[in-house]
Length: 453
Image 1 (tube, rainbow, N blue to C red):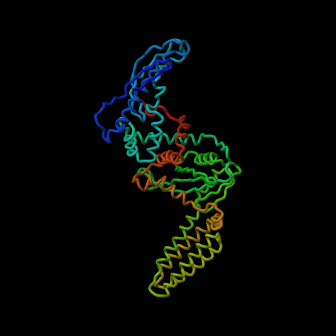
Image 2 (image 1 turned 30 degrees about the vertical axis):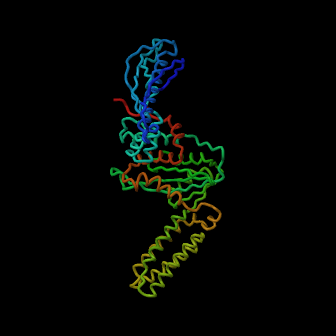
Image 3 (image 1 turned 120 degrees about the vertical axis):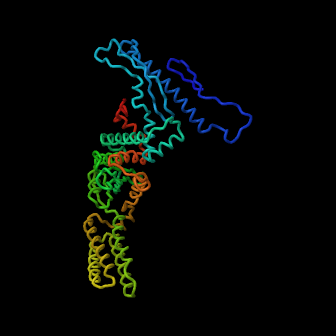
């Protein structure tokens, strides 16, 4: 039984369900089953919504100026979709009061409390599940445990998820950049990029996505992601995240990246304080790994070839050791000397192809190291001092944030705008701030969600 008590003390009792006594019990009969629990939740929601709607309509029928009752125009029906079922209620519409001279509009009280025909909690949970799982699977999981009634279509789930992402972005742009109460002594900003397969109607096979991970000291990591081609005030959004973590004009920021212009310029423009760029050791080590892998294909038919291949492998390891210790000039000299000797060896017939391949890769490594020489540090010393040197954690975040939902494990193609708005919701879910951000961004909601026919 459900007991509803109104403001004037009136008590209304509604029956939710009843059970019958049985002679014996089985393990399946102990307690409530999932179907019985869903039925009780659905009946409770139906009676509660109907009672609240009737009370609100009675209150709004009284004119606040002259205390007269507004005349009834007509009565329609309206449905409210919630996590505990779809409820159909009566929606009376009232004519304007006689005292209203300037405003002669029809009053619909039910539309005031149900502007979008769904509860905000339903929309938030639907967007969160749609960001974490494929839309069809998210709808199936929700209907398995909740009395949703007739399930929403996949298109409705997609549109609501993207609408929530658009609200989160508008709130991130409009939010004031106020510094946190606890200023951070330092900020580490790790930026990396990923690629998502583009829909066929867009130019190019893939488009780029930037993922940033921000940390202050030993605190929790905060994730930021966006599609640069679709982001609105991307730098301002990232600066707002930094301000929320306590960054100020005096907070030093260490920016880890692969040396590309996009991540470096984004981190430098968004940081409010002084910045220090560091080339990610992971990307630098991968560049060294290319000639190291090519050296393994060195011919080994004769003893001289095997010794030459061994010396080449040791030389590449010395290049790696010098770069690990920040000895850029010595590394470049060794790379140049090794590449020149390999080009001379390429005149021989046996190891010609292998020597040319390793020499070409060493020339590429020399070009990369020369271009990034200003941001290569002594990684060995930095690691001993506990300073950040790698974006390996960001690489795993890119794998989880992009590939698990939007690329590798889900064979699908995305539009840049759809992927950008999806990432806004997915990032908020990863940071565990979706509930707070959704409540704040509610002011940017467009009501109704779908225009009436």
